Image (cartoon, rainbow, N blue to C red; front, side, top):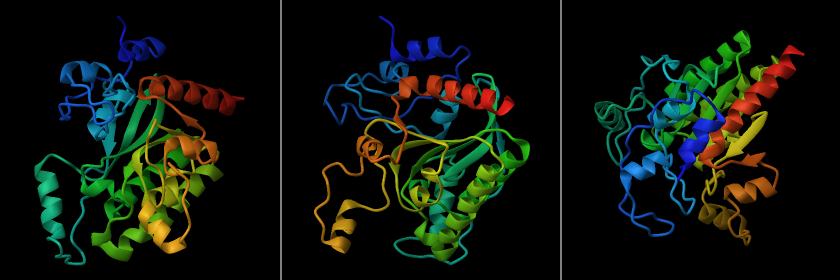
Length: 282
């Protein structure tokens, strides 16, 4: 019986590389069914019940970029503890531990091809300090957006973030303005900008660049918002709609354009790239 991954490969020939193995629990958190790691990888880490497990950066790159086309940029730009943050633990120690685990930063940026379409691609990695927006992440994003504006190549962003990185204080908050301005220059240049919002996308990332795409897509059940429901309720004293930070609610409210299952995402993006490329040629 064909799997969703087989369908994905049929929709778009020459799909990305093989997804790496990822550590997941023994049972699906949504339906409770026992998981088989090998079968789950074939299903692009989507349970039969529809639960979408979080993907890290390497998995997204393998899924979206045509094999052998990913060329990372500015991987040598690294973060430092400029504010000497110590609580609850040393920020520099947090960075060093992440680097020792093979993580680079919360954002990886480079060029690739998706179904033959050249593009700039940036992917958040929630494993690195919760995918938070930092000085380095903001710099990589801004450089990629500016290069895309100059070259005319479409820009694809995959988000997964808890917001701005508190260990960098106002310096992290400044990245919101920087990347927002870079998105503005991309729009002014008439270059297509696509965003895929995954679980979770919050804080400064959602406020600055995640919801500004020409087309905003989201994975099913992705949590999307600015801050937690409890904080909003404490600030506004208002009764909040049920599920108001879900992808489905954001779709109904017009914040996003489509909710797309992961097994169909690559094909949808390929069609969008083709449509926007044809429009640009006309």
